[in-house]
Length: 199
Image (cartoon, rainbow, N blue to C red; front, side, top):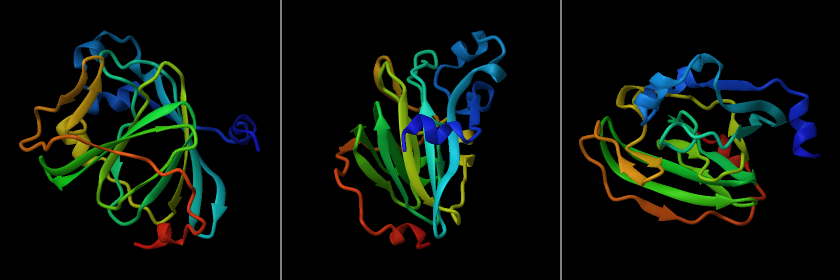
């Protein structure tokens, strides 16, 4: 089924700019935006398909810059399950970090294009960045048992790195930030998705 047909049957959950304010790098730009509550940053179409306790979502991130920062999702952590993600259209940079409060032990980026696949381990805060001039459409399978926690990013103004027009910039609200690593995505979809149901 074509992506457009699939998502046309579902009303998206839109993340607006005013909701993103706590995690943005360019706060000066945010203050200049009129009616940020009407500025849609990205759309999520949830539960387009089901497999046992797994759900299939699609996220669409337009190529609308957030001031100096490239468009991104707000970011969160699933403490109990993994998430499987792949790119349907466009390009993406997937950022993940793990640590305790403002002291990060591990952080990495996976650059992906159409057809590329990756998993986000349980216990890693993560977000998606659209680094291109075209919209990004990605899909995911995740357990309905997934727990979402946005609190760390809300408290520390986002992840420990921002991706901006000047490149990767460290977030000064973190006490310890390791060197950013880059990993490669997978090319093949796992045949068995049961590992996503395991807490």
